[in-house]
Amino acid sequence: MLRTVIVPPAEEPLSLMAAKAYLQVGHDAEDDLIGTLLAGGRAHVENSLDLALVTQTVEVSILTSSIDQGGCSLKPGPVTQLLSVVQESDGGSSDDITHLFELRGQTLSLRPGESLAVLSGCSVLRVRFQAGFGSASDVPEDLQLALRFLLGQSYRNRDGLFQADALTNIDDLLAPYRDARL
Image 1 (cartoon, helix red, strand yellow):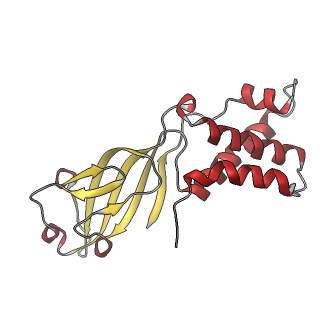
Image 2: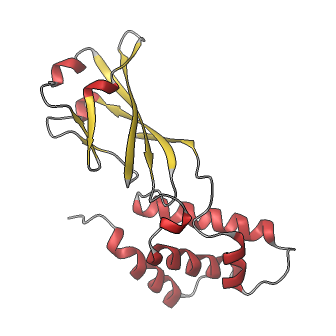
């Protein structure tokens, strides 16, 4: 599944002011560095958990062969709104078929009464949706705390050497959001 962020988050899960307060930085000289570390920490948390922390618009390309009667799980989550489904035919044409689909939780599913036959001659679906918890204030506190810990480690250890106990604390905070894998 190829994923592209079409509209990035309008804000970070932590404001620059909150990040500076956590880091106990009282000057503006390192605002750019702190902003970069904050964005990098958000990206790390989002990628490691397949989550979008703050609302953003994402497009994924799905092979139609991966869609079955149960639908297809969309990542990153939480998925909040289906925006469009475009069918790319083998001949190069594209058709908007959004009306044939609905969201069921995090799953793109055919609406009742539709069948997989509507996808014949199609190799790829481009699915555009909104994902994220909402605004920065809607991001769960444990994820914000993990981001603070990660930010603190990145800021204090710019040489890339992280303390093992701090990484364990971060991992413990992220653990409930990881998909169970066998």
